[in-house]
Structure formats: structure tokens, C-alpha cells
Amino acid sequence: MVTQVTGGAPSQRRAANGITPVGRGKMEDVNPKRILVVGAGHVGLYAALRLAKKLSSREAEVIVVDPQPHMTYQPFLPEAAAGNISPRHSVVPLRRELRKCTIVAGAVTRIEHSRRTATIQPITGPVREIRYDHVIVAPGSVSRTLPIPGLHEHGIGFKTIGEAIYLRNHVLDRLDVAAATTDPDVRRRALTFVFVGGGYAGIEALAEMEDMARDALKYYPELTPADMRWVLVEATQRVLPEVDRDMGAYTVQQLLKRNMDIRLDTRLESCVDGVVTLSDGDSFPSDTIVWTAGVKPSPLLDATDLPRDERRRVTCLPTLQVVDSDRVVEGAWSAGDCAAVPDLTGPPGTYCSPSAQHAVRQATRMADNIAAVIRGREPVNYRHKHAGSVASLGLYKGVAQVYGIKMTGWPAWFMHRTYHMSRIPSLNRKVRVVVDWTLAFFLRREVVALGQLHEPREEFVEASQPVGSPRA
Image (tube, rainbow, N blue to C red; front, top):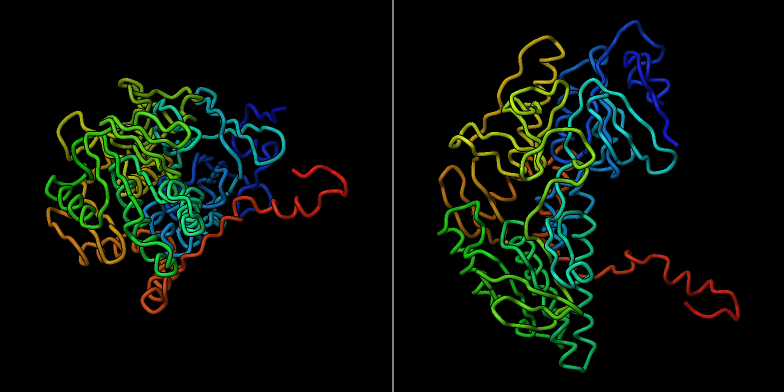
């Protein structure tokens, strides 16, 4: 059943939609614009924060729809997985930060911009439709996978906080398995960790997890670092394509010094039953296969009537307005990983890269442009020259290339932390992250697996079996 609202101005439709503007009691004789934000990632959160700051409640109401109650600051996923910061400190609670906005916990399943209507499936309850004047389409991206046999059954992604914490617990659990067994084949399989994809996500995840596991071995007298095998599989001939080749080569050299197995110009062909088969002919069993080989726009875009390019991204002008050929789609805006935004600082025909650096700045410009349009002014083009990139290679190790300046080792690691600490939203999170880092200087890293988090009812179900019934 769909709760449907049609016709009338937004101010007349709110009661039927079940949404009351924040900061209002009785209905006032005003007609504020309704701005619907689809997705609360980097773009959605920053845009909503900016809109709430720039526009009064008499000018607009901002509705944010996302199935998760938080925004994940993805650059901190490797640090959260490695135990350098608390997982909760790498996410930003929506209801605390967006107090001037209306939060709808649910998933947008369809956008019909021709009707200025979005269909929403709440966490529970019937499907509902929400009408809007402006929509920000920012569902982000999902892992771009290939039809590789066994990947669906055995692969682990690295895009969400749940995946990051699962990987942490899984790696530490494999150390326990290896330490407890007397079977050399079981030990070898448990201690073989494969990461597919040599971009920033893959390199940082690999480096941080190896650093954590090596640190954990202090408590495993049965194991040595030589027992572990860390494999990076990259289909191209280089890693970290966002930086110059010499910085990518430096990264490979540092990983090789840590006895990692780096396979460039190599593809994953199969991982059926956990047996990894590579295009170079090698084959070996592994309990851990992490897929970080790129992203693609959210499949939600398939359920919209918005124009898209050959890569299925929403086509945009430099103003972040959605464009169909040469015609502006009034009231539709997009940015971030799911949008094709022209890069005015690069050669003609180039687009902004799908990075947090662009997403945050695009969100701010887009919010300012929406405010300008509501107030009858012209939007301004987004223009930002990519400043560079920073990456952590484990504790006190990193690589950075910022505005042409290249750094490695401790200075790059320090810049990585400083930059991302400055970018995570809210003072609350900045303070908590700095406290985590400060305590890490004096206290040993926590290297205990909490695998029961993934099956919390298992023990209770076992204990509560009726007498005489077969055990599950």
C-alpha cells in the first residue's frame, strides 16, 4: 500500500505526508520550498548542513532520507578496522547533527522527477510518497564487482563500517584458528589474506590490517610474522593511480619490505571454495578475500527518470544541476560518486573524480546554488583543482602528494591524519578521534576479536532449545 499525496503546494501537502517542518508549531501563511536529500553520505550530510545554515524555516524545509542513522566517514574505515579509533567515532549521527532537518529512516526506491515525487520504503510500515520542489540525488556508490566464480560466496567488501569491523574480527579470528590447529594446511589457509584492488581503499585496508595483525602476533607465541601471507592483486601495472608513478612505486617498495606478495598486471579468475586462482597461473586457498576493485553508481539510479551517461552516472552541469542534453532539469541536483560533474580545472571532457575531496566541496557549492535559486539568483559553477591525495600505510607510515609536494613515511602519515581529522564533521567527532589517537601513544592497541557481534543470538538460541527438540 502506498501513502500517496498529489497536487497542492508543499505547505498544503505536509500533513498528508506525515512530515511536519522542524521549528514550526501551527501552519503559517508561508510556502517554503521542500528540499529532499536522497542519501546521507558525504554529499547528503554536508549539503543538508549547509542548507539548514543558509535557509530559514520560512524559506525551505530539508528532508533527509537514508536507511542508516549515521553518515560514515569512509577515509577512517581502515583506522577503525585496525583498532586505531573507535568504530563509533568514524560515523556521524544524523539526528544530532541535522537538528534543523527532518530525518526519514528508510530507503528511496523510486524517483519520478516528472511528478516531483519520491517513493520511500521506511524501515517499517507502508510505502509512502513524498513530493518535493528540489531533490538532491546523492545515494553514492556501491562496490563494482565482476562475475568471478566464488566471489559472491567468499568475498568481503570494504565500503561500510559493518564491513570494516567484520574484516577486523575475521582477521583476528583467523589468527586464533591458526594458533589452535595442528594441521599445516588449515594454518596456511587461515593466514593467507588476499586483497583485490590497488587503489586507495585496497592499499590502506591491506596495510592497516597487516600492521594490526603483526602487532597482534605478540600474543600468539605459536605464530610468527613469516607464517602470514598478505597478497595484493591489481589488474593494472601500478597502484595508487591518483598519484604519480614514483609515489606508487614507493608504496610497492614499502609493502615488499614487509614481505607482502604484490601481484601487478594480474586478475582474480576464481575463488570457488576459497581457492584463489590468478591470471598468472598461481592458485592457493585463502579464508580471506577482500574486494576493493572500484565502485559504481548506486543501483537506485536505475529507478529514476533522470538522464545518465554511459557509466550510469547522473549527468550534471558545473553548477551541479542535472542536465538532459542541453536542457537543465529544473529542481534536480546531484554530486559525488553517482554524478558526472565536469572538471573545469582539467582538459575539456574530463570529470571530477569520485573522491571525498570533491564530494564535500560539491555539496557546499550545490547547497549555496539551491539557496541562490530559491532566492531568485543564478547558480555558480563548481570549480576545484584536485589538491592531491594522502594515504596511510599503517601506524607511522604513509604516502602523500599534495599540491605537487611529495612526502613519505611519518610526515605523510601525520598529514593524512591531520587532513582527515579536519574534514570529519562536528567538533564532537574531531575531539573523540584525537582522544583515540592520543591514548594510542600510551596504551597498547586492542587486538581482540568480537566475532559474536555478527551472530549475537546464537548462544541464546542454543540455550533456549525446548527439551527433547533437535539441536539447530
